[in-house]
Amino acid sequence: MITDSSTLDAFLPHLVGQERIALDTEADSLHCYFEKLCLIQISVPGHDVLIDPLAGFSLVPLFDKLREHSIVIHGADYDLRLLRRSGYQDAVFVFDTMIAARLTGHLEFSLAALLLRYYNVTLAKASQKANWARRPLPPQMIEYAENDTRNLLGLASILETQLHELGRWEWFTQSCARVVEATRQVKARDVENAWRISGSNDFRGRDAAILRALWQWRDEESRAVDRPVFHILSNDELIASARIVAQHGTHRPERLQGGRLRRFQDAAAAAVGLPESEWPKFVHKPRLRATPEQEQRFRDLRKHRDEVATGLKLDPSLIAPKAALEALANDAPEAVASLLPWQRGLLGV
Image 1 (cartoon, rainbow, N blue to C red):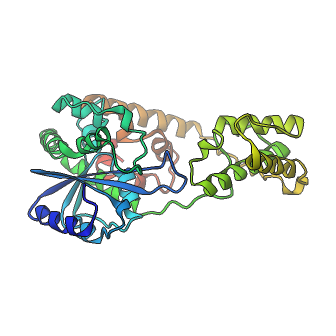
Image 2 (image 1 turned 90 degrees about the horizontal axis):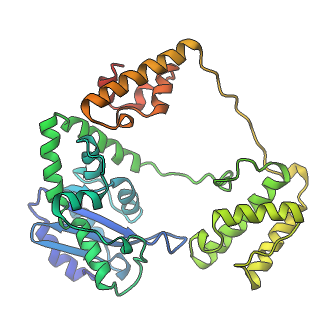
């Protein structure tokens, strides 16, 4: 475990000359409202290290060194976004083993499934949802973290061989580049509609105003104590509470007490009393109905995609998801651009 600058400086020379570096991260999103990077796992031949971002030393030397190498990550999108928020920039190339596994036809492409298949290593599920901000980390969590990267370079080599044998290496590089590009885009939070959670579709008028107010109350409570929103009330509990308030004008959830309960009831009462002019607005955008010609083109595209996927032993959605086929059938301006060159080639568009 690297917990200070001097130990990090002593380790970094071991990265010199390495073609690839295996990397993974752990965060505390299941335990905090404000998610933070809690651990960086790195493996190169002869060295498996854990780097502690919570120890308070600069990670800049590490990030500068990583930029000089190809990085192997399984399911890179989340890790890259997490690292970017801590100052990391792009590496020479990101080798995403999950993408590689899917493009080589693996039906089970989780890291746990691949490590079990190729290395007979079982990842302990108990640590997946553990609190990675905990210090010191118990032995079982350390072992879990090390196993995430210990065999990742070997797995990448296996999958790379398969990609070349199948003639899909260019597909792979294009797909990885798209993931990296996507992580450069900051996802802005839709504050206006964030309260529209699963189960809220049938809320209208005053009922919608109540749900919105309770969602805002829950968000403020979560921020104040830096805990995930489900620690306050789950989405199902929030939906149920909004329905009860809408029917009876008040509610007393069993999980709430003291000041938190009072603030909940104050938010509910304020929402009940809102004038209609302040209720959430619903703008219905009419969906253009496809013409018979467009519907036939969609069916033709889907049939062709599925036949190609069957021949290649690939998940059809890898070649083109349903939304992309619909856009192509409807001649949407962005349709072709949404597909990578290898996808367009297989579809013939």
